[in-house]
Amino acid sequence: MGTMIPLGSVLGWIFAVLGTLVLSICYASALAGSSIDSNSAKKFTWAFAIALVTLVAGVILITKYWIGGA
Picture (cartoon, helix red, strand yellow):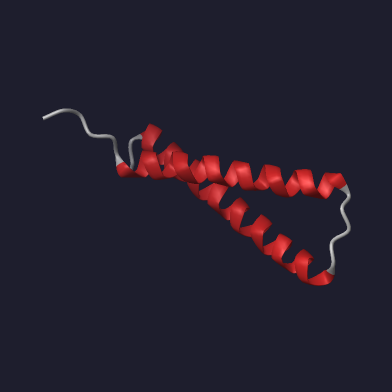
C-alpha cells in the first residue's frame, strides 16, 4: 500500500489557502475605497472574521502535522 497523506495536513492547507484568498479579496476591496452600505459592511465583516478563523485553523493543522500530532 502506498503512503497516505494525513487528513489534518490536507485540510490545513485547504483552510490556509482559502483563508488567505478570502482575506486578500476583503483587503483589496477595502483598499479600493468602494462605498459600502451598512448591510454590505456587516456581510463584509462576517466574511473577514470567518476567513481569519479559517486561516488560523489551517495554520494550526499544518503546524500540528509538521510537529507530528495530526
